[in-house]
Length: 383
Image (cartoon, rainbow, N blue to C red; front, side):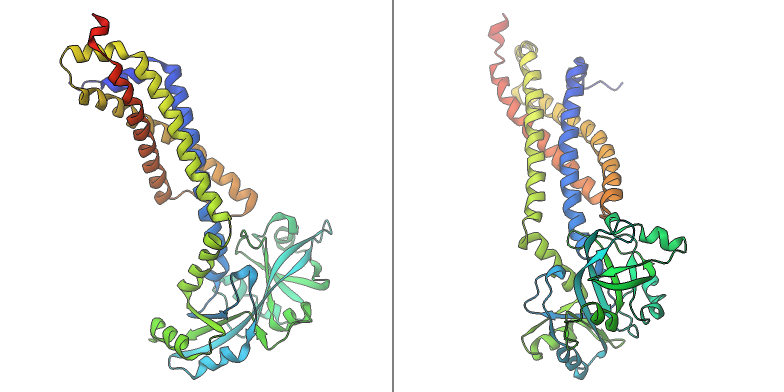
């Protein structure tokens, strides 16, 4: 016969106190889930354009710090890579931000504009590659339908067959197609076009200066070897990255170069501390209410370690039971946030495991603090 644990009997004796405890733990879990979710969405959205670019090696200026703060470098540097073993082709990419005029409300908002030669395969996004002929036409752009809604119902109107003409940086453009990439903390939306159209939109740009250089390697070429070779031999006014290093470079900027990464980490820590305080208050009160019972157990010969195990079991039960509703509510909030902001915020097994671990640690710390009151359980007080 399976015996009901004493820890559960004590917790379930006061239903209202148990519900308050679970609500407090769930609240702390939701705080941690949301902060960790925002933090991960920040990093993932920041590298969405990088991930969509089709290349093996990337060149940027040494003065560039992130995609939202690119500095130009000479296009000759990119073409110099063609002389190195293993390099198959190169593609110059132009990048800038311009004001997009909402074609319905006529208000403006900054949008990221990417320009490249339509003859090159710069992106691995099918919708872009299927519409390369469109951007060969003068003043035609492709619009990211997952951009924030402030840019207007571009995706919806385009699917309905409507002609969408608007302005970017005060130049008249036409939407020739849509694709899906997604907004980020740095860019609310994205359009892509040909390099010639890009230079028409930003007519003061120098065609000989580019923002990103994409290098594709021959089949069988070793990315690491070619990357090192380029780093060692190209002039030091450019930085050379593999695809993965290019994304890590962007993540590092948002994590260490801005306060945003620190803020989300601090928010997670605050949720953890709030949980410790809430659970401590619950367990401390529970221990105080049951001091006569604990004293009786001591008088019966039970050791202090037995009483300690009861309190820690209570903490463990609370952590698991509070985690379940906290996770469920967080999943709903993730969905609402994703729909409202277009950020890639989703529940993952890794994050759920991380928060569950933090919750267990949080409750065990609270239990360890509350156990100090067991020293007041003196059998002599009840006889």
